[in-house]
Image 1 (spheres, rainbow, N blue to C red):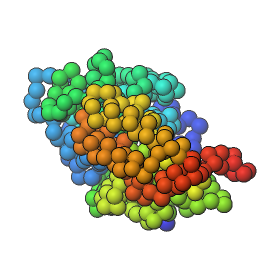
Image 2: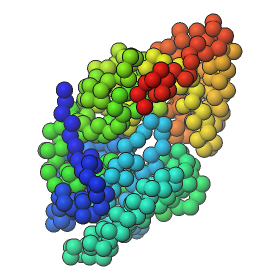
Image 3: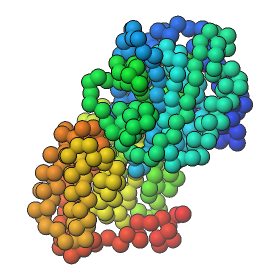
Image 4: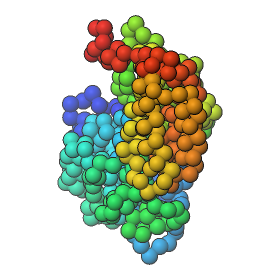
Length: 434
């Protein structure tokens, strides 16, 4: 079994883990002191050497993204942290910010120093008010300690951090829609180029990174890039938080090296709920093609998951046992994407709407086998043709479920309705675990 690597989650079991005192007791902000005595370009190079890739789903090399900033620009540089976690099943950034917000704040300061920015923003989903309050508290504590503001720790470096709450729109997890929202406009994706590194927030060079990506920076600075690169696989280096939810005995966050398998994670989590067996699961959230029990031993790294036909994404492992109707699950996800489509482009706006209507009819057993071909045709007209990745992600569960569970779709027609009892998939059914 692969060993867990509690780095970001190392202090979650402490009652005061979210306070500055609790964070500093475990060595917090020591990396900041080290960073301020290092040239910014050396920090950028260290992040490149570590192999850290974006933890928000795309997996783009973080240091390389920082290196895209133009060497000279008349506009200020900005760091923006994407904390708009809101995809079904994705649950790592929210608990990280609740339990250990100072690791994010320290990461923001070091990253801002590395890219030579004097103003950073943390964009948080508006519904998670408890997280927003905790971030405000952490930022205030950092100002009090001299970690933020003017002449940080006597280094001559200045930085201000703004915690900004969004209005609750999934599309604002797309980086350019996030920028529009941050500027006060309706959150809709921008046409690229120009890319944010050249013309992002307020037209200035901007780096946008996920919470977990930025929170990983202090440990790289403190322990060195070789330490980080020694974990994971050759091309997917380091550790990550894997979120297990659904029909698993002990759901939660498991921080482990990239390349661990679901079989290993399930062993740690006590397996599928008692008396049941694994049916299907998502390796990276609802926007990734689903896997079955045949994929239990696929290494959970970017390359291996991609080669098996899905995406690692945000490592949101939603686990479903044999009591779950695939059609019903895909319908629920599709209803989410139809609701959250910003409507800017026709393929996504119309395609997700028709997904919802057709899957609802199919789940009720009122469709025909020809409808499955229509769904696949709609998918072809969304995939690669939508303005941003929301449309592409919406096709993943539809296409993969038809590919892997076509017979189950057909059973709905033959049965004249859904052959599954939805109550049996609940945790309280038949005296199951609560």
